[in-house]
Length: 390
Length: 221
Image 1: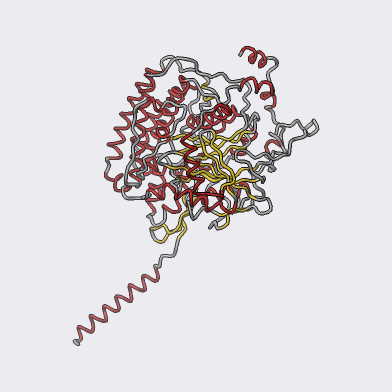
Image 2 (image 1 turned 120 degrees about the vertical axis):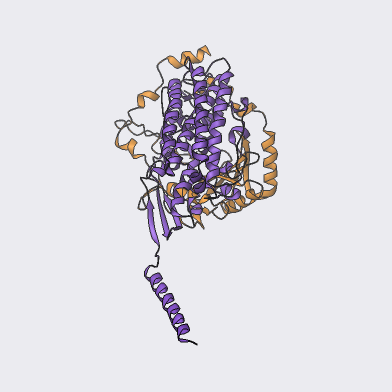
């Protein structure tokens, strides 16, 4: 062996040793990263504790309870009409939609059904709150990926919808408008024409989001193939709404369940996506806003005439029994299991909120993802803290 | 008040509701498979209810999952004891009212104060089933569903902290919402709602019947 060869070999060995030494010195010990409770991606105060190895998440666990208000306990000391004011605050971006399943459950126990006109207006307001809720999601999604513009569009256009809700119910965020047996009031004059023009604006907004966000290369790079949830896992965790449909499950409670509501009077489509990644979840939501505007447009033209309240007593006592009603809320399946013992208020109410199940998948989903993807995955799962903690 | 209730609900669906054949057929199919583990079953209010024994709690979930009930909806519990505090609307200057203490379980009956309650759904038909099981007072525990439905994890943690029902085999049974050192189980009926105890309920006026108004309403109808 020549001297040069020896030297080369020695240099090689020395180089290897130096690398090894550097690796030992820089050995990445696990690091714990705390996200929240005050992070914009959390829509409230959710804290996520992530254990990292370098840039990868080894273990992540959301810590809930910063907003637990104990609604299930509070319902036991309220009368039925008072509870709608409480449940409004569960998912505060789509408040009216929270009232509907509870009222339907109480009506089912009483054997009362709202008049057709009330059912129609309920459905319209339900879809308006979905539009207000999900359009904010679309704007917020941009912010979490570093795009500032979409959120301005979203807040601007959501304002039109909130104005409509305020015009009809008197409350921008918490309508408290649904009553057992019907609605508090009829629609105001000029509502139909105004709503038609706003729906047109919202469809333009969806088109803008489509090009601005979904056609954006950076957005696609950061969401496609990230946070994939297979169909069977999604079902096991009880994920619902757009999150489930993005995993390829063609299931929408508005279409597949017969409730005294007016969804079956309109012609619309349930969108699904086969991929199950962050992009699919966002995309399905965008299509849902479009479909909702179409539902509202169709229902506005076919509102039947008639009363808006069924005949119910002034003091509402619900007969003994148990009933479960769930609807397809903006965030997913929201249901109430109401147990009545013939009193002024319920004996027990189990509130099944969508976000609680949707977010319970995060320990499984965040395992092995990179730090920047945590935020996009959380954003695409779309949860509202009030809906997790109740 | 009782008279009012009778007057206004002659149309209640409890007696002459049309038979729900779709769900009855489905329930027969389920009962065939579950066999003698089901203590009681019922089809009512567009829903199916079954009650199983606490030892069969987990196997019921496995069987239903194999029958197509793959969508996990929720797990919770019901405390059937009437609240000793009523609705927290007592006037503190008056002597405490006598309340009923008899435990009356709801649909599908029961023998114990606590029942666990869960719901599973068949996604392609949207048929759901409510499953209940009695939990003995001296042994407040049932088997965990985590191995069957991973989503049961958080629901069982919540049920544990709110009712104090243990889930055997749960990997991480700690508090979901409350601080670790919190004492008591808030959704039990004997856990007082403190806000209603420290300050008398001011809204008592609202729930009193209006003088004269309602009787006229009933007569008119």
